[in-house]
Length: 359
Ligand SMILES: Cc1cc2nc3c(=O)[nH]c(=O)nc-3n(C[C@H](O)[C@H](O)[C@H](O)COP(=O)(O)O)c2cc1C
Image (tube, rainbow, N blue to C red):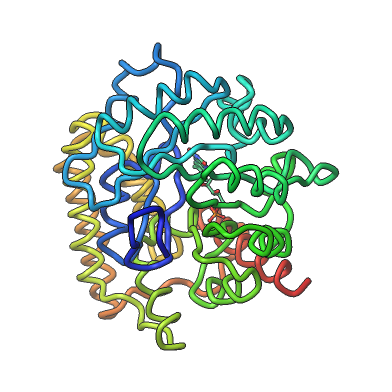
């Protein structure tokens, strides 16, 4: 798949996720087989640019190219300015967020709230495309609500405006994260435009990835929640798409090494004190579905320093290594079981994709 002049190594993208896809996580996903990653969104409001959070989000040193930065906002001139600001700081692709239903974004009528105002969508896209000489991409949902699905019209507006690729989460804004993903709408969008279309929503296994590519005809797929704690899902999908066979589960020692590497990168990016706190969610996801995960999360949440957190992580992996060479996930999560909280979202996502593809 190409985005403007950038030929991507494959058609597998990491979805932008605020608070998750920081530079260390994006880098890890790219090393483990993702061909493309989009940064967490950066607000277009210049007043927010000096905050520590915003400054971290525009820090791309050492990132594997192409560096794609997502911007969010509702005013065409400010969005154009935000695009220029980010290109000056290393962005090689600008992605516009019209897919996020989060209140913080939608209260100012940005993110997916914009989908109900097609003339404004057109003005924002035209202003941003004219402002920078790098490719501009767009991320949308299928519409503001089930009664107002306008993804095909938005896609045509995007193509007309010079957008280089379109990612589409197959749910409306009103549906948030519930209900089956509308792969049929994504297929319709793909048939309606000539620009690359990337399908997104509930893809959580190599088989699902292939089924979604087949069902939608999309040029690529984008994976969000299933990559949390499983960044190696990209190489598993790439292998399956190339050979029709699943890779064996990864070696425990390889995953120990990459979790430790992720933690060191995370601490140096966020600072030791904040890093220990913000690493907890990643560690919780790594442990989800693994034997002893609940006890590990309790121990790890009590850690206040990188050294103690690393020590608890190593103890956890020592225990897993004692059980076998390969990482074995519990195949059937038990509702109400000790690890149920962490496991259930994965199981539900799988179920929803199955329903949608069967429909
Ligand atoms: C924690 C979290 C944060 C997200 N932040 C963003 C964001 O900043 N920008 C955006 O366009 N979408 C955001 N999304 C939506 C994802 O990019 C993606 O469209 C959605 O999770 C569906 O894909 P999935 O089923 O593979 O997770 C976020 C999703 C999650 C779970």
